[in-house]
Image (cartoon, rainbow, N blue to C red):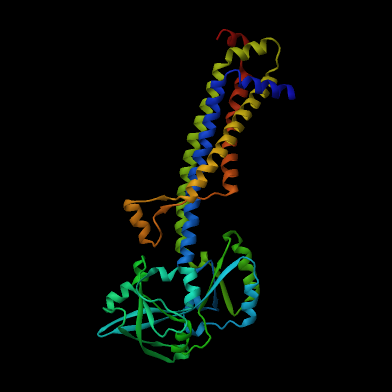
Length: 406
């Protein structure tokens, strides 16, 4: 067996140009496949991370039936026992409490329905960077009795910092909630729906205003590793009994999941087309190598070499060429992908405008993880191995006399 391996290795370097051409076809195939998949998965990871940091978190905890009914009657109280167990779960980096409801907000003769969100200012800022979205006035602090409203809503009501708005709505157990509150700041969201409807109070003040002391509508959870999502979600479900709902980002944002699934299906189709092109390239190279060696094969068979042994040698040659192309392609692609992961490609024009409309930064990020390399490498190797059947079948049908005549 070692004799055939040595013979195959030496055969490769008898014609260096031919070997390098064959290895180059595999080399570029691996790089193209890795770059394409890295762009796809990188953008999906970016969309998910940006979406959960925009508001929902990777996991949310609600009172039972709150997500379906969105009523303060389904809000919850978290005791210290639950919170202490939650803090001990490995991988949780942030737990952001919120009190959310809807109410009428008015100024003068202008009135609109808006979402009132009671927040812990410091924790909320860690999740959503809300302070960076401030365009006027001051952000809330723990003792603030003012309100921060979105820019679009401020324009509808024709108010600014220092003006007061009236909030009128229904609190916990149907109690009337009404107050005149000064505007302390204005924030701007890129998504129009958020920019025309969101307002923020401090958590304690919102609970007092809506007669719901210590009650929360949601607890948003951030984790340090998205791959640990299922484990952390399972542990949270073990802590919080049937009086609570534990939902991950896929349940909270089904539209985003569907968008990723559709785009991923399109990406797989494009990757399939790329693999077809790659397969023809590799197969054409192997056909060229075989056609150049017809006379050589005829001489070897004529002097007594068995066809199956000659086929085995050509198989080893294809293996060596494939591994050479795959190995160098993977090694060269690593610094390229790491560079683009650290320096995402900025987007411009209509594509940038479309991404901004979704509230995301207009960039094309890349992802780098071991599984991506293995998947693409084994796929290209499989294509090369299938292509290696051609010289074996060719040798099997080869007639030495005809081969010697050229």
